[in-house]
Image (cartoon, rainbow, N blue to C red; front, side, top):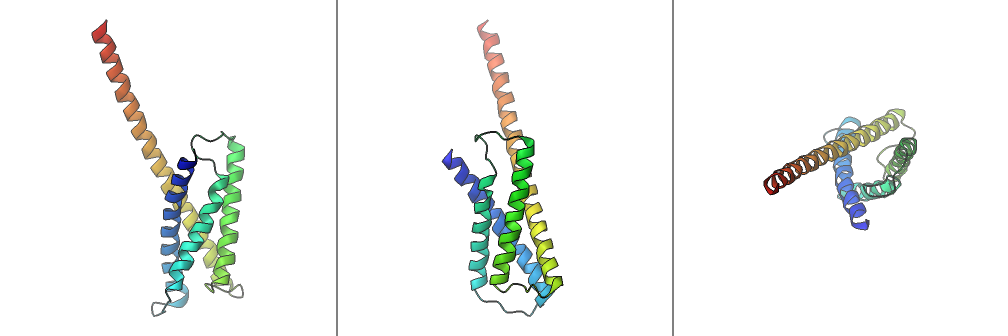
Length: 154
């Protein structure tokens, strides 16, 4: 069970880090321009932020863990979204990515958070759907083979 959780978190980390990287590229271009020079520390900030955001996913159950109701799952997803917003806004401010004095930057950051969150969720859902489809095909194939085998033995 622990291995499944770690695998899910590692996969989520990659999606989040990729999303933050794209959002940062767009955000920096829009608010600071193409000519902005950055220090290498921004790469570590992005990786650290992705890691902290990934830790918040512990509230979302992975396959095989205790089942939760639909209402509970929606509450957990909402709590995770609030957590991600708080972490990104706090860290982004500390890293100097934006200023709370600039409403456009704050709104841009909030929009970037929403877009990355949605993109990661859609990507994860799509990959889960594909995995389920592949498993269903394998089960269907296995069932057909069993049926053919039983037919031969009768």
